[in-house]
Amino acid sequence: MRCPFCRHPESRVVDSRDANDGVRRRRECVSCGRRFSTVERAELHLPLVLKKNGRREPYDREKVVRGFVLACNKRPVTEAQIEAAADRIEAALLEAGEREVPSATIGHLAVEALRDLDAVALLRFASVYNDLQSASAFLDLARSLTEEEPR
Ligand SMILES: [Zn+2]
Image (cartoon, rainbow, N blue to C red; front, side, top):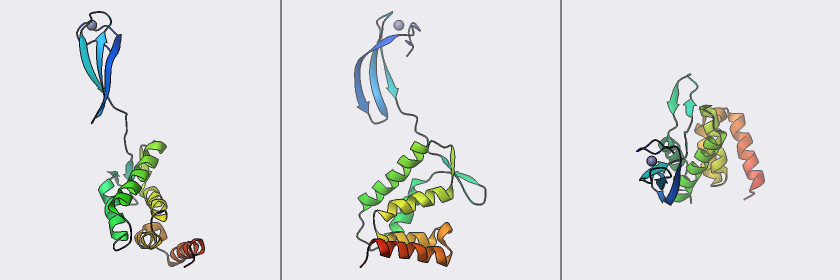
């Protein structure tokens, strides 16, 4: 981190603490001794979503959460669980580190996240989710769920 006063390339960290927007560090230039602050944040970029019609749009967490809320209507799923599920999707996207992902990938991640939450919500979500619109795929999913959790 170059000193803003004398442009010396080396400084030592004299204090470091978490800030809302990253890690705030107080630094002291090893050459001129003046102090300055820096904020370092991880480079976290969610990918663009490549839609079926070929358009790209920014990943929209609100859209995912809205889909979950609708699917979980009157189901024993809390808002915190829905937020956590959305967090897991974002973590998976960040980990993959792609610049863009097909909307189907988001759908798959959402289905996986719901699988852990609620079987009924999962089926509702899957029924409106493109890749499972065919009746047979929907029934296969329903069957796999009832095999996992006999009622
Ligand atoms: Zn300096």
